[in-house]
Amino acid sequence: MEIILKAKNIFKNYPGVTALEDVSFNVYKGKVNVLVGENGAGKSTLMKILAGVEKQTSGDMILNNKILDINSTKDAEKNSIGIIHQELNLFPNLTVHENIFMGHEISNYFTINTKKQKEITKNLMRKLNQAIKPDDVVENLRIGQQQIVEIAKALAKNTKILIMDEPSSALSKNEVSVLYSVIEGLKKEGVSIIYISHKLEEIMKIGDIITILRDSKLICEELIEKVNIPWITEKMVGMKNFKSVNIAEPNVGKNVIEANSIFLKKKSSDELILDNVSFNSRAGEILSLYGLMGSGRTELLEVIMGLNNNFEGSIKLENKILKKSSIAARINDGIVLVPEDRQGQGLIQCLSILSNILLSKISRSFKGFYLNSKKETTIVKKSIEYLGIKVSSYNNLITSLSGGNQQKVVVAKALETNPKLLMLDEPTRGIDVGAKQEIFYIMKKLSEKGISIIFVSSEIKEVLAVADRVLVLAKGKITKELKSIEITEDNLVKFSQG
Image (cartoon, rainbow, N blue to C red; front, side, top):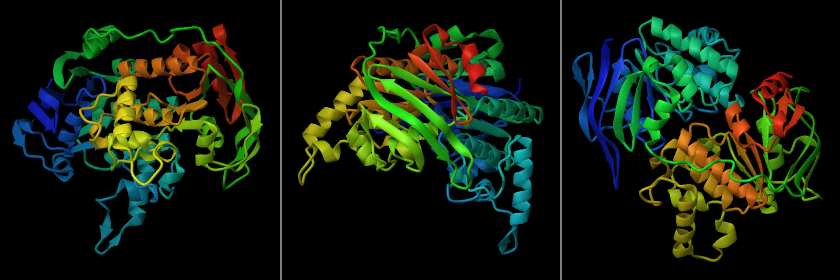
């Protein structure tokens, strides 16, 4: 196999922390080069260096036996290196074709050739088997559709080495199948794929070579055909012993939330997003909402959270009817949501880790003209320890953390509201196997304290591992309630088809 790109002896140092320590990474031509490791292992940092987003402290990058000097994303693009980031990098107020051609517009002298851009966008969406239109505004698309736009944006450039950082994390099963077929097509054209994913079954299916990082260091490189999932897990996490998720039988109490006959229409039509949905969630219970993309899972959480008040029906919290009101009022009532889009809705990028954790607590616990820095520090240290957040300093920017640790900060912020009902929308998206175990363990501990937990997950195995009860949704309706031994993969798949 031909090595087209080699990162050799790469070091990357930040103040107080080494993100990469003497890491070498080979990219083989026309292959899917899988890169795995726990959150904080250095995967995203290495990819940012290859893509020109970051500059290595030392070490060389060699493309076709020539040393590269990449100082920007433009330099990377000139060398046919492109990246699809784990977090969406789109302009929400612009159209699909404007996003795809941002920075490399097709122009006729002094004007942009929008007709040509739309034509190419249509062809890209046809190739990706998507019904997304060139003039669709990005903010009106679901997360999964926005991820497809990111992929199309990369394909619109003459990319020979394509970095995909968790590209399937927000995609439905059908969209993932499309992604796989696109990858196979790119391989046949000689494109080299660098693929980062925490879905080990996924990388076993599409990968050719696997490279594993742990604690900022290179552990090994091997052919996918020679390894299995237990081997990968052992190399990723070392000799860590994780606590069992199912630490106790659920001790279910009274109803915390009760929704009755919830109807929600789309803004532009009479089509129903939620169609006569009624359910309850009890103290000490972990309730899962399972369904395919477009089933109404996220919209139901948004209605309960007060993000969308254009619904019909009623919601009761501890047998008291809740008025249609603001998100702040819902938080005061004891309801909190960990959103699916942690970058856009869960965090403030320009603030520190400490400030992000305390965002939900300032008005309640820090009254007066001055903030109590000593009290702040005590609270944040407890949160970091409780959730196992890997951080060199809580005063660092939130962007200094890996995706998984950023997710833990969003959870920490939610817990500071002392919720009666904690809702989590895809809480393990982009999180490694070890961090998933930690999130599940935290969910179990919180439910034992009497908190009612509702979570959405696209991963069947997560639902099977954690849920006490499952509501399956399809096309805005609850098609089945599953309990105990009824919670099986077959039932989840069958009833999610509607």
